[in-house]
Length: 223
Image 1 (cartoon, rainbow, N blue to C red):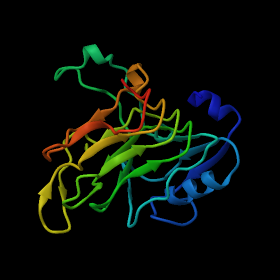
Image 2: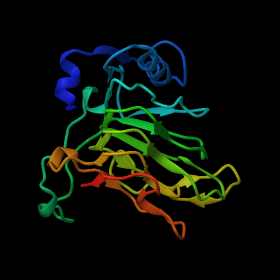
Image 3: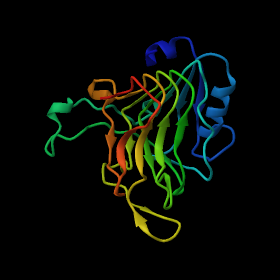
Image 4: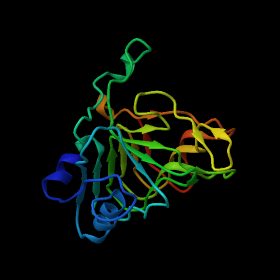
């Protein structure tokens, strides 16, 4: 199901602050979408000057909605999608997207986990996820069917610089083990358009991967 189809007949939950929990928070929007029957849209309308950093104190609930959820970081004012074709990207002509929503972990948790179906996540920057000395950690994991991640940045600063995190044990590190961890069926990373290009900064840990297709899933597509 496309994002436009979702928006045309979906319940909408709007994030209005960067709080970890409570009314208007990203966490509460996920809870509401999981509870609501049918398709949902999670939009952002946060006041002030961005980028807007949502610093999480504990893991988010899984996105388990079977009806489909569009999590649209590009709905936040000040955001813009990339317009540069992938074959034209270079140092001189970089991606020109500007996500404004930053989802930041505390170096002791995994990121977003999707166990439902037909969820699209776009225009979000993921930072500082992963668990110290644990090799099965990720920014986002897709376990359902027909889900898509597009136009997102992984372990990148909002200004395009590489993100370096300081772990709770005082050690500097720059990545979790996996950027995108994929199981399930028919999940997609990108949609083949300039606006759908994801920017994934490769993990520094030996054996890690920007995108990892785990066993048990099939018909999943990068690109």
